[in-house]
Amino acid sequence: MLFPNFADPSEDEAIRAGGGSLSYRRLRDAAAAFAAGVVGQERVAVWATPTLESCVGVVGILLSGSAAVPLNPKMGSRELEHVLRDSAPTLVVAPGEEELPPPLHGLPRVAVDLDGAGASLPPEPPPESPALLFYTSGTTGPPKGVVLPHRAVASNLDALYDAWGWTAQDVLTHGLPLFHVHGLVLGVLGPLRRGGSLRYAGKFSPEAVCRELEGGATMLFGVPTMYHALAEAAEGSGSVAAALRRARLLVSGSAPLPEREFRRIERTTGQRIVERYGMTETIMICAVRANGVRRPGYVGPPLPGVEVRLVDDRGVVVESEGDETIGEVLVRGPNLFLGYLNRPDATAEAVRDGWFHTGDVATRAAGGYIRIVGRRATDLIKTGGFKVGAGEVEAALLEHTAVAEVAVTGEPDDRLGERIVAWVVLRPGAVADADELVSHVAGLIAPHKRPREVRFVPALPRNEMGKVQKAALRRIAEA
Ligand code: MCA
Ligand code: AMP
Image 1 (cartoon, rainbow, N blue to C red):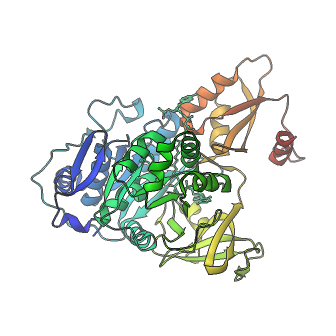
Image 2 (tube, rainbow, N blue to C red):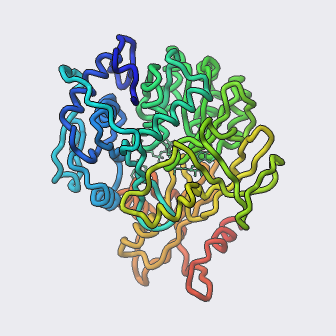
Image 3 (tube, protein in one colour):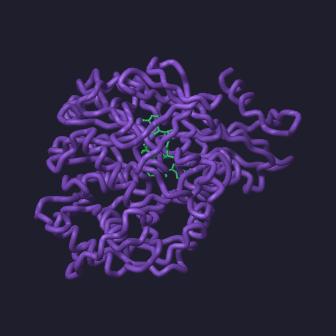
C-alpha cells in the first residue's frame, strides 16, 4: 500500500501549497473521489503546474491503478507532441482555468476538486503495476519514457526513511518542479507515504523556502543550483542563514554539489548538507545517512536493499574501498524501473543481467561511500539539475531555417553546474541572432533546454568521417 495512513486518515496537515492546505482526511477524500473518475485508464497525463491540485491529481491516479504522466507545463510543442504520441494518455488533468497548448486539445480533460469526497478507496494496485512515467533525455533522439512501478516507489521511499530517520513528525519544504522524480517522488510522495507533511514552495526562491523553515519545516530538498542561490542569500542576510540553521536536514541531489557550495552553507549556517544520488530509472541509489559522515563530494553508501557495483573499462568489478579506482556505477534492486516505454532496445542496452548501467563513473571509499567523478557520455548535460541531451538541442536548432550546422556542448558554470552552449554555422546569407535561436529552442522543447550561450562559427571541427569533434570545441572554449 503506497499511502498506508489513508486507511484511517487523521486531521493532521498533509500538504500546504499556494495558500491552500489539505489534511490527510481531505487529501484522501479528494484523491479517492478523483480516482473514481480515472479508474480503468492506462495512462493519465498531468499538466504538472506547481500546485496542490497537481499533487492531489497524481495521488488520485496512483490510487486508481492508472499510471501518471507528469508534463512540464513549459514543454515546447515538439517535445509535447513526442511525449503524447509515445505515452498515448487517454485523459489530461489540468486546472480548469489553464489554457492548454494545441497538442493537448484532442484529449478529454479533467480538473481536480480539492473538496471532492464520498468515494471509497479503490483496491490497491499490484506492486509491479506502472505508477509513473517520467521522460528523461538520452544522448541522442527524443526523451525516453521511464516506467516506474509502485514497488520501486514504495521500497525506495522506505529506504530513504531509514537513511534519514525521516518520520511523520518531519515537515518537508522544497520548490522543485513536479514533473521529475526529485520533486514528485521524493518531494511529494515522500512525506505522504510516511504520514509527514509537505509545505510546498511552488516556484523556488530562497525567500520562499526560508519562510517555511522559519515556520517549522524540518527538511529541505534542493538541487545544487538552489543551494548556490541559498548560499548567496545566506551570505547577504542573517535571517536566511538563521532559517537554514533551524533545519534538521538539508539534502542536495540531481547533480554534483560543488565543494564550494557545501563550504559556503557550512560557513554561514553551521549545516553540512547531506547528498544523495539517483536517477529517474532507479530513483535513489545512494544517500549519506542522517547520522553518517557528511563529506563534500560523497553521495554516501547504497541505500538499504539497493546493490551497487563499480565496473572498470575492462568489465572487472572494482572491489577496492581505496577511493581511487574508477568504475561505472551499476545498480540492482527493488528500486529499478520496468523499462523504457516502447523502447525494448534501449531497455536491453541499459539493463544487462539485471544490472542497470547508469553511465556515471565513480570511486568507492571506506564505508562504501560513493564519489561520482563523471559521466561516460559527454553528450549529456546536467544544467540546474535537469538532464538535457545535446542531440535534442541540436535537432531543435537545425529546425531553424537560418541554421546550417550545429553542435551543442556543456560548459562548467558556477550557478548551473553546466551551461548549454550552442556552436552554430549559419546558412550562407542567412541572418539570425542568438536571442532568436534561444527562443526558438525554448519554444520547441523546453526553456531549461535552451542554450545559455550561442557561438557563431564559420565551420565546425570534424574528423575524417565527418563527425563533429566536440573535444576540439571544448579545447577552443577553454582557450
Ligand atoms: C528565460 N526564460 C525563458 C527564456 N529565457 N523562457 C523562454 N524563452 C527564453 N528565451 C524563463 C524561464 O522559463 C523561467 O521562467 C525564467 O525565465 C527563469 O529561467 P531560468 O533562468 O532558466 O531559471 P534558472 O534560474 O536557470 O532555474 C534554476 C532552477 C531550475 C530553479 C534551479 O534549474 C530548476 O528548477 N531545477 C530543478 C531541476 C530538477 O528538479 N531536477 C530533477 C531531475 P519561470 O521563472 O516562469 O519558470 S533529476 C531527478 O529527478 C533525479 C532522480 C535526481 O537525482 O534527483
Ligand atoms: P536524471 O536522469 O534526470 O534522473 O538524472 C540522473 C543523473 O543525475 C545521474 O545519472 C547523475 O549523473 C546525476 N546525479 C544525480 N544526483 C547526483 C549527485 N548527488 N551527484 C552527482 N550527480 C548526480
